[in-house]
Length: 281
Image 1: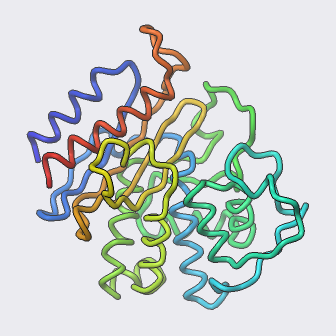
Image 2: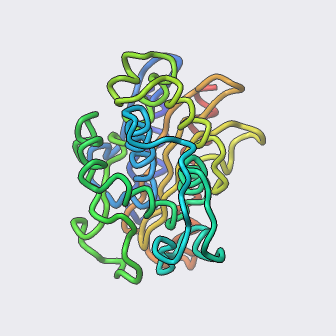
């Protein structure tokens, strides 16, 4: 793991912005990180915690996966920059499972707002704190639009690479271990539902981008005004191989060499994932 850690850190050091990461080798149960406890904007990776808070409420009987959700003008969050439902004609009904799925696989913020309204930020923050995500804070149900790239950390939703790596590890363990699932306040079956939703992710230009075609990755991306993040479970065949959470911070709009910051930000996530895959597979 030390050799891989040095390789990953060297790749991060080549770039003129901060890149923190968490990695867990699931074969040998070893982990490592770089700036793993550094608080950064979470962007939409926060939706994994929202998903699991919802799974807890489903287990508690407060919600159900098949309950109907009406999508109308009151909850379409038309002033958001992410997802699809904001463009649909209002007045249709879907199941909560579909809303959770859209929240994850296309990062739909209409869906995120609906789920966050059902749960409340206090419940999402309490869930995160209870399971040990000590560097994570959910401040907005749906992030405000048009914020400056130099906004303060306490203006936005924040987390750490280690926090999200921990959450993914608990979800994965919980899918096979009722004791761990109970720590999340849910069941192995609901942990597996969460993994299946994460496996259906359609935004795949970061962690999966340079992996062999067909590689399974259960993940959630996050993009902010200066951040290009991704966190997930990477598989080899049907077996979980490693967990990786990568968070870039203070990525400029354009680098000094003329490259677009969003492309370089996404690329470092993809390259770190590929380096870990080649080393661990």
